Length: 363
Image (tube, helix red, strand yellow):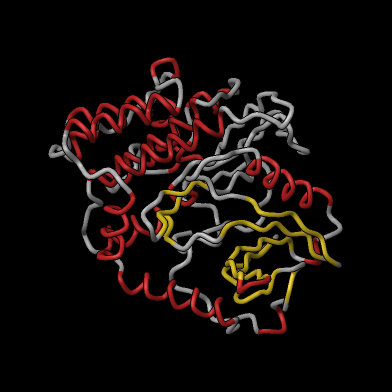
């Protein structure tokens, strides 16, 4: 059943709600605006727990954990937290609104049209996200202490390509960090199985290399249009992940430069000792490949490609921003969303899907 205006709050804190972007079992996301003197106006995304769950401390702690972890990361390719709020029965966080598309939806639509993402664009996305991950891994508290942040859910559904061509990493809802209020129990798996490094299944202590492994899987999927581990059943797929029996990129796309393929395959190496040991190393390798091969490697080229590939959805998002400017409220869902996942449950995620977020149209 489609929600009506009665289900959409007029305002949360100082933020005027314009439209619901998504809703799930635990929470929902709105696009809103904040206005100020001198004609100041800024679009934002507001993510809140459903009011009927507002007394559940576990959900509140999860929301606050995500906000605290994200706030500690300063990088242009990480969606930034603006504020944490509580009003009446609503606990919410406010984030920068990013107009764009998730990689999961882009990939799905390219496959439908039997098209491929340009190879240079895959390298650009990989370099930018690797830099964002490095910033997360190196983040420190205000007191200067390492926070040891690990995203744990890098996937096509948690990376956007913004309308100005910038890859944006988001959803630190299951991230591992010292400052979290909630912690993973022994035996719990966090994230999506299709992107999990093999050592995770054996109970090994996780480190930053599992994020680089997951990013390698993302790049593999963007280059080839398929998963590196595809069995006839979920059990066979899981066995392939654990054994590291990935289909070589060259077997699927022999036209891809061998060095770029080698960079991606090293990122997702079965042995974590053989992977890149930092996001900075992976970022440097991808940027150097682009430079040596004379490939486009900037956000303006990425924005031009996206606007040409999906012009209708770009116009839809621009229309939404126009409604934000005039506060024309709407209860109509967008066909082109993909920004933030509402509050999700903690614990084991036994799915092989590309995205666990209800905000993602590909989910």
